[in-house]
Length: 73
Image (cartoon, rainbow, N blue to C red):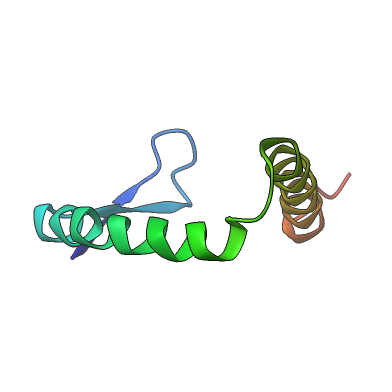
């Protein structure tokens, strides 16, 4: 359901891409995921969702920064 290809910008890295079957599975699951998320976040107003999304994006950025290997000078 996925294939790997070398990253064009960083030959050391590999990227994972969904195959046609994987994309079809994703399409089939997305309505279920959206219904589930609506049930969890349904009581949040738009402003609260935006704040939560912003906070989670900041956490993700910090995790990326912490987990990314540092260059040795």
